[in-house]
Length: 265
Image 1 (tube, rainbow, N blue to C red):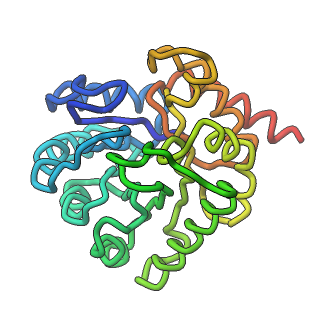
Image 2 (cartoon, rainbow, N blue to C red; image 1 turned 135 degrees about the vertical axis):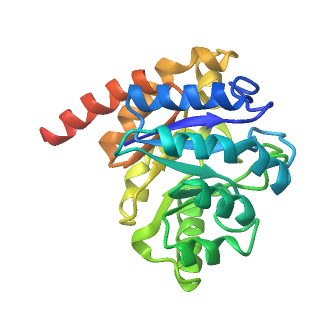
């Protein structure tokens, strides 16, 4: 399954400012769906390295008109996720038509987030991040990145369940690029099967990310679509259920071919 990225922000790392106006954002969201994204992930706060936080009222101002318009316009079989760490934003988005919460803080930023998800009985994605977006690339360090990220996610899954969220409503994301060095990201990709073995749907988000540019000596994130496609195929072969991308058409091809190969085993 593909999750198409729709950043309604002025400062996201590769598409900041492109979809600030509601009509532009809705048009792009519909394009993502037409190209094969079943989920449109709408966010009003950039989580790029060094990003400043955005208060709930501003996130709501940015995303809610877009969520409402997409909820009315998307074809059947497509739905909206809200990319936020704040319960007030998530609640407003759910009321506007969103059906999934994508929380990169895994419920740590806002103690009300788990209660909200439990109350509404909606799926929630929990991601690993070392530090915050503003500080996460300030010398991140791990002894065993795979084991540490796994342990963190398992602890957050347990916390979510204690708060009343059903296990079948929880998704996990190893947080590629969020407080990781190049080698950390590569190790996580090499061991995605260990995350899949937890038994929960895994989200993979590598789209246009800097670590691939470091491997390729390519500074322009928009030139990393082929590299992203490679990681999509790797993820599908490992058992990843959802791939979060900017470039849906190209990644849809990679996903479908990798899935056909996986099914031919």
